[in-house]
Each structure stands twice: as structure tokens, then as C-alpha cells.
Length: 546
Image (tube, rainbow, N blue to C red):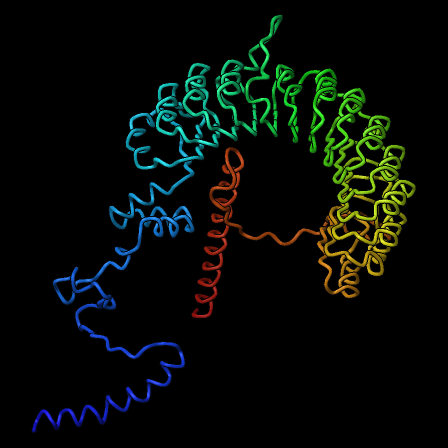
């Protein structure tokens, strides 16, 4: 009878609640089930095979034990690097799976790395992308450690070395012999030279991208009988070559002229005469699509040779003072597929309206135009915006001839323009207001260091076109003050001095010392002010008491 009474009481309380909750659970797609709660600790939901694994009732069950290793590795690959490190500390199984599914590894290439290479690469045995960085202040890895890594990572496809000065030609020869599947290689400030690069080109037949920056072994080669680089067995697969800050970059001439499938050529701040190299490249390589040239010694002869690559779509000429309108015009006439053109004239006035008009007449597919240190007038800009109907991005920086007239012409006739950047040009609010009625597809306008443009003009443009993003960076102009005699004196109003606490870790050297000294001086002056104020209050209270 007692059990019957208890059951009736439970049916009156819990039963009604259960019946009340069942419709809601069915609506949410949940099934009605009972959970056993423990006051001591929380237990995970009961799985079908939980009874076989757990002997105790309150022991937690590992829900990931039924997941295959492949599924768990896919989960780890979608996490960030920090989260993957935390997951590897959960259990031994997670540690093993996380190491097996890691394909990219970045290491500090110090001399003490050789002691942990066997254990490190036995855990990460599936690495295909390897980055080794060494600091100038510390001793980097040697050839032995470099070869040990190659013996355990034979499936590498990408390699990046930075500051590995202790790696010589012997180490590079052995490494390239073990890792023959490399496709993308980048070197910077390393110790090997011509022999190491030639071994890489001969052993890695599928090499597609090669980037070389400040190789010490190449820079030391000088005089007669200079050893050249290339072409090598990988010359047929190379698609991108980038050379940066090399004193003897001309030793890559056989490689550049032999890479028949080369599509991207980038040369930055490499000394020497490059006209002869480009003449050989133009005669033998016709598949180049993208060319970046910055601060190199070349003239119109080099541009004429490169113009033979009629499929060029992207051309960057940055601070090449010997290039003139004649070379640019010849490139524009032959490379009619040009889509992006960047010119930094370095304010030499050797490239101007004459060359840009030829670009406007020949390159109808032009979508992006950046002119820095070039002085175009309304004549050339009107021709460009009238003929290049697909022009979407335009940047005019450091030009003394781009004013309100030129900007009004752009606003009136450049219908496809989406992004406009103007920097350090003599424009005013009148030119900015013209953008409010022109360029119907314009999405973003960026104005920097243009003294004639004020915040009122930018606000008016925002009111006329609410969806247009306007970024205005107005320079600080001096405010004129009127003296008692009536004369005006240019002066700048400074805000009242405030105590500023310097941010740690930003400045270094003398700057950090000066800022710390100023901050200490500020705190000392603040303490003196507080002491003086307290003394005054004390003297006042004493006088009142007296």
C-alpha cells in the first residue's frame, strides 16, 4: 500500500510535468528519455556500448573513442595552431593523431635543434611544408641538422629558409637529393651559393616557384669566370622566379632565358645592368604574364625586349629612372592584353602624357592604373577614361598636375570606376564634390595629404552618396593668429600638456630611454604638484584655526 501511495503521488507531480514537456520535446525534435543525475559529479549521456566499457556507474565515458582516426584528424585540421597544441595535451591518442595530420611546421632553426630532430620528426611524419627561421644573434643549424631533416621529410613540397647562414653548398646538395618533390622554395639571407641553387634545380624536377633574397654565396662571386645558375632539369616546370637584393643577380640569366614556361618574373633592388638579360629573355620566353621591376638598372632597351612577350597582363615599373615614354609606348602597342599597370616615375618626368596616351589607345582591357610620381594632365587622363571602359581602380599619388579639372574629367567619363585613391595632389573640395554626381559605380574614395580638401567637402560627398565609403586624411595646417598690431603670424595651436604613460614594447633604443625619462619626469612633476597643493591646504587650515 505504501508503494502504491508513493507511485500515485509521483504520478500527480512528475507525471504531469512529463506529459506537459512531451509535446515541446517533440516539436524541437527531441525524444523523451530519462537521465540519471548524480549529486557528486556529472555523468555523460549513456551510449549504446557504454555498459561494455564502463564498470562503474559514475565513471565518465570518452565519446571520441568511437570516432575513427581520420575523422579526428579532420577536426584537428579545422582548428587553429594554438587549439591544436592544446588538443595534443589531452591524451596520447590525440597527441599521435595531431602529429600525423600536421602538414605545415615552422621551427626556430637554432644550433640546439639537432638534438630533438629524431623525436620531433618521428611525431610529425607527414610534414609537407617546412619553415626554418634563424636569428642573427644566435647560431643557426648546420649542414648535419639540415640533412637529418631532409632524411625524415622526403615528401616536402614547400621549403622556406630565413637567416640560415651556416647552411653551405654541401648541405643544400644533400638536402635537394633527399627532397626531390619540392615545388615552392624560398631562400633569404642564407649561406650557400651557386652550387647549392644548381643542385636544387637539377634534383627537383617539379619545381614551380623559386624566390631568392640576399644569398651570401652569390654575392661573394666576382671577377672573370663567374659561375652561372641554370638552366637545370627543373627549367621546364618553373612558373615564377623572384630575385631580391642580389649584387650579382645576372648569374641567373641562363635560368631566366631557359624557363620557357615562366609566367611571373619579379626583380627587386638587384644591382647590375639588366638590359642584356631582358634581351635574352624576350627572345626565348613568350609565356610571361606578370612582370614586377623595382629599382633596377634598365632602360628602354630592356622594355623593348620585354615587349616581345605579347601576353603580359600585369606590369609594375617602380623607380626605374632610365625608362621613358618611348619604352612604355612600345610595351603598350605590343602588350594589348595589359590589365594592371603600376608606374612609379620617381618624379623624373620621363614618363608622362605621351606614353599614357599610347596606353589609352592600345590597352582597352586596362582595369587598374596606379601612377606615383608621374605628372599626367587632363589630356592623357581623358584619353584613358574614355578608351579604357573597364577601368575599375585608379590611384594618383604625388602628382603636381592632377587638380580639380582632372578630377572632374574622371568623375564625368570614368563610368566603371569602383575605387579611387588620390594622395598628395593639388585638389580641393570642388573636385571632391564632382564625385557626388559622377562615377555611378564608385564604392570607395581615399584622399590623403591633399591640403585643399576639408572635412566639409568629404561630409558633403557622404550626404550625396550614402553608400560611398570616403576615407579622408587631412594634413595638419597652421592656424593664423592676429596680433595686436593687425599683422598675422602663422602659429600652431598645441593641446595642453598631459601626462602620458608610454606603451611598453613599441619603442626601442634611445627612443624608449627618452620616453621613459620623460614619463619619470612627468610623474615627478606630478608628485611635486600634489605636495605643493597639500602644503597650501595645510597652511590655509592653520591660518583659519589661528
